[in-house]
Length: 234
Image (cartoon, rainbow, N blue to C red; front, top):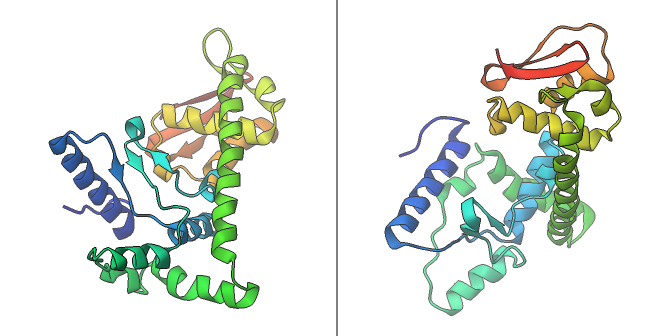
């Protein structure tokens, strides 16, 4: 059952994972192996780059994700054609989703037009380079996330409020991670919270000129009060 939240592609993805989760529960499965390949990873990196969503988007799909590491992607280092040939060699049926050739969808256009154009302009090896970029970006993003987790306690006062002066002293990449986490904790949906939202909140710290509150997704409001940053449901 496919809903409508987030557009047709996001809604279909949510429905697929819900069906997989239900099957895993029925069978008592420890893990679900997904068929994403290196080509899928390259497409994900390019989509993240086009959105301007930051280094976490450039890190693509994780080899292990989900609650308890349920989702595993063992084929991220293998290109799509090799995976297809392996299936043929073992007489495993391959089903092609017709939506993957529908130009109405961004990923489909990227797959059939964007990536071939890049390879024509830059030469072979673009997919491998993008997949390598994903791994390097993931390593950097993980390190920055860990730094932000350690720094967050130090920038809160005894009441748990974020202190603007201490936030200002942090590197922007670390500070914005703390702000994003605070917004999500306050009720902002992670999938609807974009870089532009966090940049606006960040200006309450780095470019304070008495501006008013910032409205965030999920009816969350961020405002500066007496040297503190308050983020909560409006």
